[in-house]
Image 1: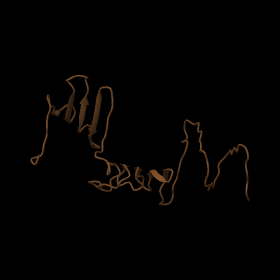
Image 2: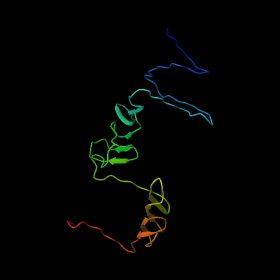
Image 3: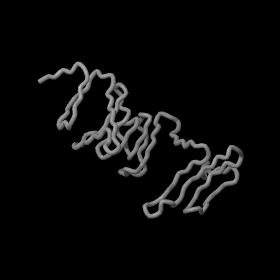
Image 4: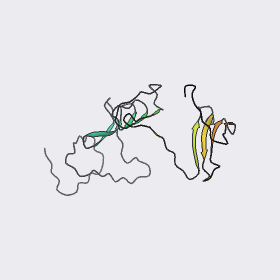
Amino acid sequence: YDVRVINNLTVEGTTTTLDTDLTAVDRVEIGANSNSTVGVAITQSGTADIINLFDGGTEVLTVKDGGRVGIGTDNPLTGVHISDGTAYGSPQITNRKAQLMISAGSEISADIQLSAAQYNHIFFGTAADPNVGGINYTHTGGYTNSMQFVLGTGSVMFRPTASVNIKSQQA
């Protein structure tokens, strides 16, 4: 049977089956107010994608069955794959969920930018030792900016005091 609701519809309780295609809708708004229950939960019991978001006809975000996330790609090659939409390259190590890939096939560079008032860090670790190493940058606003490559807790492996150029033998 068809049901037409002209004004507001309020459903209290649990709906067991809701299979609805929303078409020609301005927006769907979910107002959740709970300190213990998630506002929106999606359970995909099959093998299809969990989420696909589109900008017009272009898929801009996908969450695949198994959890891989694609931004700018509908075929993420790693756990999180950010792309300019152009297929370019492949991951060095495949089938790892904890891997970030940025592919900029039609661009001249792929960048990671860390922005903070003074310190930026990239940390490396293992399950047994979360402080295996890191790259630390300190911005002082003058000529004393520094970049440190750290091995272990507090053990400086390489700390340049001036400009350093590292080149291959072919350069």
